[in-house]
Length: 215
Image 1 (cartoon, rainbow, N blue to C red):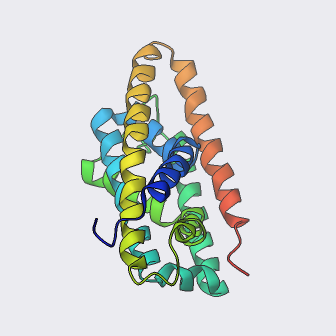
Image 2: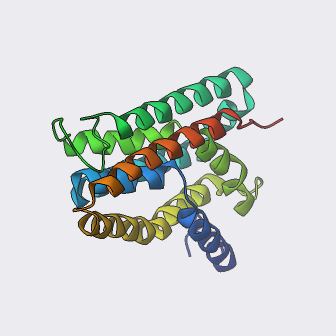
């Protein structure tokens, strides 16, 4: 077996942890649902692809030690928190603004490109310091710091996280598409969902501002 592949017990333990994290609600999940309900399955998948790209970037940063510098440097972590919170506030505004691109019940506005949906997913992933903290504090627990192949194993586990998460996010997008069809004739329900998404993004923005780096 190649040296960069962890032992089977480690792979199985991390798969379980990754699944639990994948099904835990977060701003990414809210964005997948909102984008799908607003613009359809293809835009939901484009947003998912953007978030997965962000996970890949986080994994590479951890593997090469850069994320550790971010979360242990107070100034850098503070900037990351502010940027992430502001991005979520912007998404909250988009969720209730006519033509903002996030509405479940659309009233006006041009449909965004798949590229924009992809970049939105990438942005919400990269600007969430909670994700950076997870990859810095949790992922390395499955690899020994003295292991000469630690970087390769971290990359393998990051890829495993993506593989485990994909069925979950696909199910979320498909559920959101079904829910959209079900609620198509209930405008007031859609408007309530718009405000619900806005509240979720604002709540996560507040949570991000309370996140702390390593002491």
